[in-house]
Image: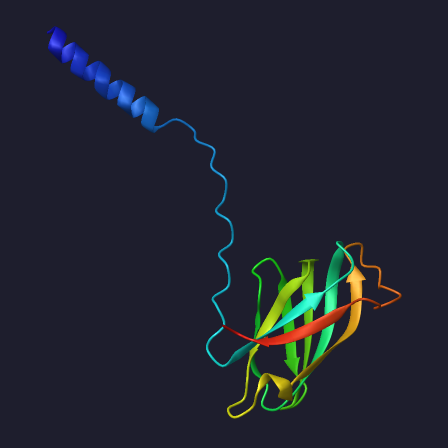
Length: 141
Protein backbone atom coordinates (compact mmCIF):
# COMPACT_ATOMS: atom_id res chain seq x y z
CA UNK A 1 0.00 0.00 0.00
CA UNK A 2 2.84 2.39 0.71
CA UNK A 3 4.10 2.01 -2.85
CA UNK A 4 0.69 2.95 -4.19
CA UNK A 5 0.51 5.93 -1.85
CA UNK A 6 4.00 7.05 -3.00
CA UNK A 7 2.98 6.76 -6.68
CA UNK A 8 -0.21 8.78 -6.11
CA UNK A 9 1.69 11.48 -4.21
CA UNK A 10 4.32 11.66 -6.98
CA UNK A 11 1.61 12.08 -9.62
CA UNK A 12 -0.17 14.79 -7.60
CA UNK A 13 3.12 16.65 -7.07
CA UNK A 14 3.96 16.46 -10.78
CA UNK A 15 0.51 17.75 -11.71
CA UNK A 16 0.77 20.64 -9.24
CA UNK A 17 4.18 21.66 -10.57
CA UNK A 18 2.91 21.44 -14.16
CA UNK A 19 -0.02 23.74 -13.38
CA UNK A 20 2.03 26.40 -11.60
CA UNK A 21 1.84 29.94 -12.98
CA UNK A 22 4.93 30.85 -14.90
CA UNK A 23 5.42 34.42 -15.98
CA UNK A 24 7.13 34.56 -19.33
CA UNK A 25 8.12 37.63 -21.26
CA UNK A 26 6.89 37.88 -24.83
CA UNK A 27 9.53 36.99 -27.37
CA UNK A 28 11.36 39.94 -28.91
CA UNK A 29 10.29 40.91 -32.43
CA UNK A 30 12.11 39.02 -35.09
CA UNK A 31 14.63 40.98 -37.12
CA UNK A 32 13.65 41.87 -40.67
CA UNK A 33 14.99 39.54 -43.34
CA UNK A 34 18.29 40.53 -44.90
CA UNK A 35 17.98 42.53 -48.10
CA UNK A 36 18.10 40.44 -51.27
CA UNK A 37 21.11 40.60 -53.61
CA UNK A 38 21.04 43.71 -55.78
CA UNK A 39 19.73 45.79 -52.90
CA UNK A 40 20.99 48.95 -51.28
CA UNK A 41 20.86 50.11 -47.68
CA UNK A 42 20.10 53.69 -46.66
CA UNK A 43 21.69 54.58 -43.32
CA UNK A 44 21.18 57.65 -41.14
CA UNK A 45 23.92 59.71 -39.53
CA UNK A 46 22.46 61.78 -36.69
CA UNK A 47 23.93 64.09 -34.05
CA UNK A 48 21.02 63.38 -31.69
CA UNK A 49 19.95 60.42 -29.59
CA UNK A 50 16.23 61.22 -29.40
CA UNK A 51 15.06 61.21 -33.03
CA UNK A 52 11.52 59.92 -33.45
CA UNK A 53 10.78 60.46 -37.14
CA UNK A 54 12.69 60.97 -40.36
CA UNK A 55 11.18 61.93 -43.73
CA UNK A 56 13.38 61.10 -46.72
CA UNK A 57 13.26 61.41 -50.52
CA UNK A 58 15.08 58.87 -52.68
CA UNK A 59 15.89 59.58 -56.35
CA UNK A 60 17.17 57.08 -58.90
CA UNK A 61 16.23 54.73 -61.73
CA UNK A 62 13.67 51.97 -61.22
CA UNK A 63 13.19 52.27 -57.46
CA UNK A 64 11.38 49.22 -56.08
CA UNK A 65 10.95 46.93 -53.09
CA UNK A 66 11.36 49.55 -50.38
CA UNK A 67 11.57 47.80 -47.00
CA UNK A 68 12.16 48.58 -43.35
CA UNK A 69 15.70 47.93 -42.10
CA UNK A 70 14.65 47.46 -38.46
CA UNK A 71 11.65 45.71 -36.95
CA UNK A 72 11.70 48.42 -34.25
CA UNK A 73 10.61 51.10 -36.74
CA UNK A 74 7.29 51.91 -38.35
CA UNK A 75 7.92 52.33 -42.06
CA UNK A 76 5.84 54.14 -44.67
CA UNK A 77 6.79 54.58 -48.32
CA UNK A 78 5.22 55.89 -51.49
CA UNK A 79 6.57 55.74 -55.01
CA UNK A 80 5.91 59.20 -56.42
CA UNK A 81 7.20 57.94 -59.78
CA UNK A 82 9.54 55.29 -61.17
CA UNK A 83 12.45 57.49 -60.09
CA UNK A 84 11.24 59.14 -56.86
CA UNK A 85 10.23 57.56 -53.55
CA UNK A 86 9.15 59.24 -50.34
CA UNK A 87 9.89 57.40 -47.08
CA UNK A 88 8.94 58.06 -43.46
CA UNK A 89 10.56 56.12 -40.62
CA UNK A 90 9.06 56.38 -37.11
CA UNK A 91 10.19 55.04 -33.75
CA UNK A 92 13.28 55.35 -31.60
CA UNK A 93 15.31 56.23 -34.68
CA UNK A 94 19.05 55.97 -34.25
CA UNK A 95 22.13 56.12 -36.42
CA UNK A 96 22.44 53.21 -38.81
CA UNK A 97 20.33 51.49 -41.48
CA UNK A 98 16.77 52.79 -41.76
CA UNK A 99 15.51 51.20 -45.00
CA UNK A 100 16.50 49.14 -48.02
CA UNK A 101 15.50 49.14 -51.68
CA UNK A 102 16.23 47.14 -54.82
CA UNK A 103 18.68 48.60 -57.31
CA UNK A 104 17.44 48.59 -60.90
CA UNK A 105 19.17 46.15 -63.23
CA UNK A 106 22.26 47.72 -64.77
CA UNK A 107 22.30 50.60 -62.27
CA UNK A 108 24.87 51.07 -59.55
CA UNK A 109 24.52 52.59 -56.11
CA UNK A 110 26.00 55.82 -57.46
CA UNK A 111 22.88 56.30 -59.65
CA UNK A 112 20.84 57.02 -56.49
CA UNK A 113 20.65 60.05 -54.24
CA UNK A 114 18.82 60.48 -50.98
CA UNK A 115 17.97 63.59 -48.98
CA UNK A 116 16.48 64.29 -45.57
CA UNK A 117 13.28 66.34 -45.81
CA UNK A 118 12.48 66.61 -42.11
CA UNK A 119 13.38 65.16 -38.72
CA UNK A 120 11.35 65.25 -35.51
CA UNK A 121 12.33 64.28 -31.99
CA UNK A 122 10.41 61.70 -29.93
CA UNK A 123 8.23 64.46 -28.47
CA UNK A 124 7.04 65.25 -32.05
CA UNK A 125 8.89 68.57 -32.28
CA UNK A 126 10.34 69.21 -35.73
CA UNK A 127 14.08 69.85 -35.67
CA UNK A 128 14.84 73.45 -36.61
CA UNK A 129 18.17 72.46 -38.17
CA UNK A 130 19.38 69.43 -40.09
CA UNK A 131 23.03 70.36 -39.55
CA UNK A 132 25.18 67.26 -39.01
CA UNK A 133 22.44 64.95 -40.33
CA UNK A 134 23.23 62.90 -43.41
CA UNK A 135 22.27 59.72 -45.22
CA UNK A 136 24.46 57.16 -46.94
CA UNK A 137 23.59 54.59 -49.58
CA UNK A 138 25.62 51.40 -49.72
CA UNK A 139 25.24 48.13 -51.59
CA UNK A 140 23.82 45.35 -49.45
CA UNK A 141 26.33 42.61 -48.62
